[in-house]
Length: 311
Image (cartoon, rainbow, N blue to C red):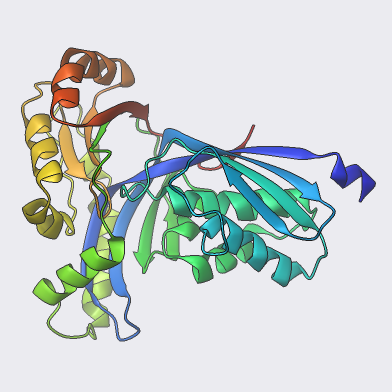
């Protein structure tokens, strides 16, 4: 315990974008059957972990818009890990927030996974990735993806993961209005009401869609300097109701070097892909005032081969 008490662990907790998001249907358990490609990007939060002697989880952050109580996914993850391991240790956790909240970039899910990974090391628990993924599944649908990260196929409600062997070097521009956020749960509910008339029972269709994404998903993203194809079913709902999404997609459509553009997750963040980071950076510099005048925060990112990392 004496050695552990001196330890401070720092973790980089990256966002994700959806390179494919297909809602196959609504399941009888209330969740939706999904077929997705998720990709980490290098817009990241940072977490620091230290053991405390009080046996409690204490979370602080530089972000004033977050609850730091038991409803925070970081605290939930830490308490779940304490219960699973039956230990007496506590932890002081500090979150430096860069990923916008309610943005479709899964910052909260990334932080939850980073907490499982960070405290597993801090408390010297030695749980394997399979165990951490199992715990992550009980916390939220996007969280298991972040245990391994990088680029993965995600099926089921997000917990069935298949690692993809690909290293795209695209540059990314993100646009988000800081005054707009979207509820993921509400978006799925609206999509379900419009497009999911009955519960999904056709397992053959589910497997056919999964196999199609396995066979063709990366092909849609692998044509040099051509317009690429990205599907996001939730965009069908959000774009019609959210002017910031509609406007962001329109602005991206006018950029001559843009390979493709889409909404990420349930929005409202939208992204555009470019052949490399330098091209994206030049495009952002040329259009920064336009984006700002239309109310958007903007970022340039690249894809990450790995997800959560120790620093």
